[in-house]
Image (cartoon, rainbow, N blue to C red; front, side, top):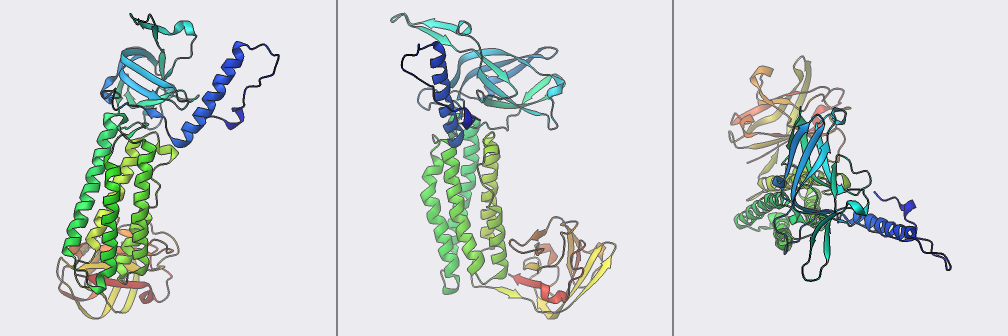
Length: 452
């Protein structure tokens, strides 16, 4: 990145002889100003003029060829980009550049960025291209080189690759950062995958609203779903337009996520159903991750992947919304026993009476509030209805989740297969240590909620 301390204006004084160095210094000062601005607003990377050059920056136009030893050739065809200093880096047609790779350059992951940058050379090394037959103007092509590093910010990432012995393979899942979303075909493909997630979310939301009766007890849910749909309508044209600066596109998505997150946060505070409040708070916590940061500017694919996961969270959340009258019930607990066994901490939960379930359908949520002094050694648990030994219970992996905003509090959303009986007065859980240990009055720390 440009160093602010080096951005000093050229000193001009009356009477001085103007030399070539003055103009070089002026040019460097201007470049540093442009570079600093580009680094702050993200207007660097692959570049595509949507009207004049629709066939540039295809990942398939880059290839490697091993020559001998550490020497390789990199073939590049029809590519253009803008570096951090605002310089256009452009290859029309095809070029083959020299490239060296030494074993000492290997890293742990075995993946490397390839930068294309202007070659630092004298004007005599600039390639003469063609002469205009009418005006006689001589056109020149800049010389370029490729590198694994971008120390002076003069280069732009064009691909990521990995190497096995002498075989270099381009990682086609990598999406380089671009000035525009449509800077490359692979960037457009990533945008299209995101649009499919958005379209699915919108479709499921419309279906849910059509099935929901706006009764007084569901007014808050109805209003929230309506706000979601209005937000979708406002942002849909912005998401569909592809010739948008990448930094602006992701800023727009972040604004969209912030609106959804705010509505869910209100629900997590104001809604009376415990299980839905917990689920809303969990989704809000997952949406807190910023979409675009400096480390993600190198790979648009990572950012789109994060956005798609956000839509997975909010889409799944729709399945937790009530479609009819509130049917949530808290099961009263009479006593709780904790026994330390080799398989884990066995928790026997006795209900005040027999509770009724719909086998394979009733959804049950177990909340363990302030249930430990430290994090458990695992997120796997076993749970079942009635009195059962460890081997008879379902092994549920990674089902233990932290309750957002609470210390050492956990939530268990039981899958339908846990509900194996229509009636029971006891639940048996095996929890990873040290859950439950040293907790006084276990009964007051446990909440059991069921809903059909």
